[in-house]
Length: 258
Image (cartoon, rainbow, N blue to C red; front, side, top):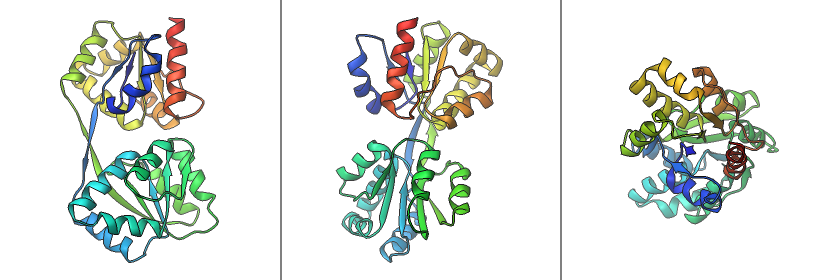
């Protein structure tokens, strides 16, 4: 069973199930902070109180913000400014990352999906200017949905997602070609996209789809499922909730059927 996500996140979560299945956790992407003048301008606006709401889409946003603020010797000012705004985050892992770095979280969207985050934000009693902090490859649909509900949205790209073509990914693709993978699980559309790009570059699209026909494919959430299906991949497993524990329980139940 292969999970196409960061090993540092998924390996600890898989440990309670290691007697039931063999897990391989490999990420086809890596994150790199976008440490440029745009982030400096965001900090100026944040310190000036321009934003009523900050929206944080994943733990990588927190880690990138802290890294870049610390490099500017502004981490304490960042903490103080965040405490004066309403910071909304997606999922408990993002909340835990923020708390670890001393950033106050006002509320948490329950699931790691765009739909859940947008619905949670739109239940706030007021509208105003928000900073949407995310990768440089974020879907424009979130902005559209928020602006439709009366928010003034400023996107702040704090990190970039780069395809990671390391030895671990090569080993996973070898294993897949040899028939050694029963289940492939994708946490996000970005992980799905990066995996498909690498697989197509190695085998061609037609052969890639043929290889995946013999594998049960799992997607954590509607957006990930749609991205895979757009490519032509049949998705047979989607957890009821878009969170890691629900995904793992579903994967283990599938392995028990094999």
